[in-house]
Structures are given as structure tokens and as C-alpha cells.
Image 1 (tube, rainbow, N blue to C red):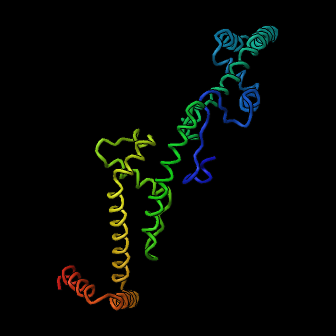
Image 2 (tube, rainbow, N blue to C red; image 1 turned 90 degrees about the vertical axis):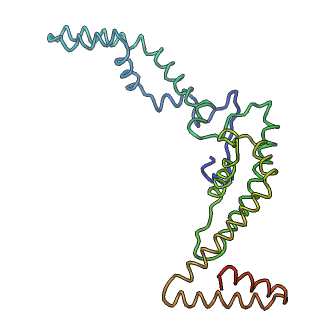
Image 3 (cartoon, helix red, strand yellow; image 1 turned 180 degrees about the horizontal axis):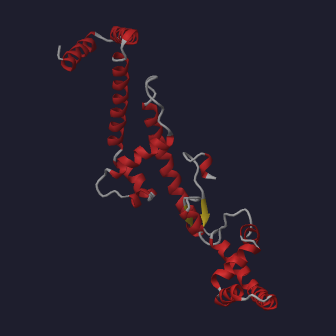
Length: 253
């Protein structure tokens, strides 16, 4: 079941004859569609039974009512084998690859003859996606002020970047070769986005510390300045000069 860990698990089924149910169709029908349900369906759909039901309501004499009830019973017995077969077929239709795909149980139905090629490209795409996803998750690990990015959220972020590309569509996102090609072509853009995301998270973290108010802001600001001081002390003279110019330009000092 992919819902156990949707970030890494996917379910597939053979397109020809896969079944997802625990029970066979006969067993499912006997549990989900019992005799009373079959009889109820008969009386709802069969014209003769509907006519007999109406006639039964009109009869007052007990003997006449019994005669109609016997006719109803006879009609039910005649229809029962047909309706039992229909109930089994109904359960079978709810246990096909198409139905499993429609309700989200499987990712897709795969033809057996195409399985090797499909899963080769699927695995390559997923490994590449997981690598980018790992980098996105790491961008949020800059301090206590940020909630961790989940793998599922990171994948959605990658998808949003993909859809920003000219010509990209939801359908194309399901094409493993197209996504893999996009990742290769846009590698520098993806690295830039990840750097920007890291910078934004760090900026937000510092901002939250310095604007927290009270002693928290004072201690936090002092800690930030102390950290900068220690980092500067490890720089060369040229790096320190460049850093000072950067601070002047950024802070407009």
C-alpha cells in the first residue's frame, strides 16, 4: 500500500488481468451484496415485480394477498440466478486496473511487455528527483525557526518548478524521460533555485531572531554578531576587505 510511505512507495498493476481485492468476486459479492440487497434491487428494477408489489397493496382479502405473495416469491426465484451473476460481475468491475487507478490505489497500469523499459526510466527519474529533493530538504535545516520540509512537499516544489518551464504540462510531468531530460538541461537553474531557497531560509531565520523582542532579540543579535566575528577572524585580509565592502553595500553604511 503506497499510503504507508507515499514519499518513496508507488504501486503498479499489470494492465491485463491484475486484481487488487483480497476476496474473489464471488466472495466479495456474498459479503457486500447479500440476498436482501439482491431482492431489493429486483423490486426496484423489475417491472413485473413492481406491478405485483402494487397489486399486493390493493388486495384486502387474505387469500388474494397470499396468491400475489406466492407470485412474487416465484418471480424472485426465477430472477435470483441472473441477479447473482450480475452482482459478481459488478464486484469484478470494481476490481480492475482501471478502477484501481481511478481511486488512486495504483500509480498506473503497466503492460507486461513494456514493464522493463518503463521501470528503467521510472527508477532513473526517481533517483534524480530524490537527489534534488534531498537538497531542498537540507535548505530548511538552518535553525529552529523553520519547520522541516517533508519529502512530499519537496517533490511538489520540484513539480512547480517544472510547470514554470515553457511548454511543460501536468501530463508531461508523468513522462519520466521528459522530466529526466528537463533536470539535465536545467541543472544550473535548479542549483540556483536551491541556493536562493537556502538564502531565503537563512534570511528569515536571522530576521525572526533579531525581531523577536525582549532578551531573545538581544541575545540572538549578540549571537549573530559573535558568529560573524568568529567567521571573519578565519578569513584572509583580502576576504575580510571584500566582506566589509559587502556589508557596507548591503546595509548602506
